[in-house]
Image (cartoon, rainbow, N blue to C red; front, side):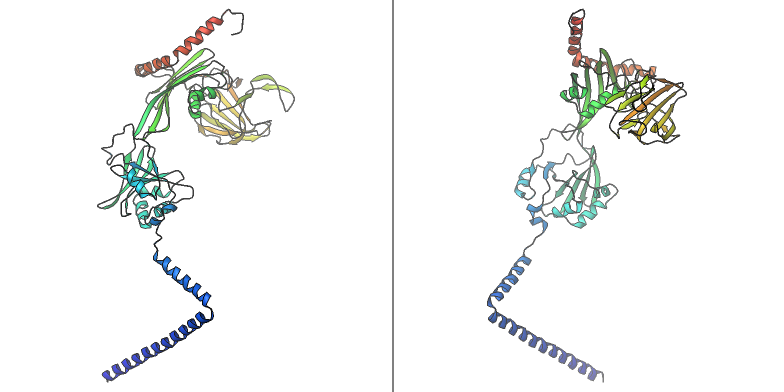
Length: 494
């Protein structure tokens, strides 16, 4: 019985197959007949259809992988040698290599001819709107390569967040396989991701950092910024110079034509290229015949600036609590008020500045008022010690609350024109034991001088710097002194 059932099933299966083949033959014959009729009735359309079918077959045979689209890869590719393979063997020395040449990513011959011995980095600069995935794809690397790199550890996860202008270096072998990646990690280190025997691994590699000592000097004829620009100083360096002497010199009102400055500072270079300005090591400013000098010295609490006798340049209070453009109204006990049209005391100084300019705490202290009223607008009062209070009026915004502890130079608000004000400015008051004093002329208490046990080290540090300032500015100072002596007793105005 079992054999009979098997035979019956087999015959049924064969019969079904024959049926399917028969129906397929009939359908194919019908389709071929239709095509033949179409060719006879519409020969032109038929030829066009056959041409389109042939074109599709040809296109399917062509490989349009990213590696064959060299003209579509628009990243700039540079070729540089790797500075070193091991951190322990990498000495941080001034870089002297010439700048790398720019080559076209699609021109493999140019790349090969530009490659030096050692690791070959293809540098890609990120453009606006690009992602790391797109960069990997344009270089012929897979999404798996990207996933392995980004998910390797806590350091490589940062690579997923890229910005325009970032640069990545790629080492790709002749078979198009990922070998290594190099990225900026911080100012003086590279993050290297490379494929080793046990898979991917990451490490930090120091960059070639170099500091260079630079001198600059100038004579003011119109403004400090113009004179500093002629001396080769950036605006940032000019502001830093002014901040050093800002406790002694009012740079809005005290600067005069003929004032002189000289400074010695560092420039930071990386991989043979200028990176940024470093710290000012020593500076001199001659204002209205008075000479002020500052030396950078670390007494154990971080570097700061000191006068040659060891007194800090930093006073207990700032002379002006903001970077201002002009003084719009001075301290005046009998000032005519522009809004009330009455003579009433002006117990502070008005500093004109654009809305939003940061306002700083003049000294360390505690906020005792932070509020708004119709006369003062947004205002902040700070208590310093037991007998000094500073007041800041007409603020656009307040950044501190009552009870907050603030440090000298901390932003407590921004310039505005709230309350009874005719334009954006800061009204600043200085009170001693409850009595108003002129903020521009009041004697500011000095900060604590260097301790006696630090003075010898400070003298040794300042001696060569002061000699360098003398050599840099000495002839200018002597010439100015001769001019002053020549003008003494003269009938004409020198």
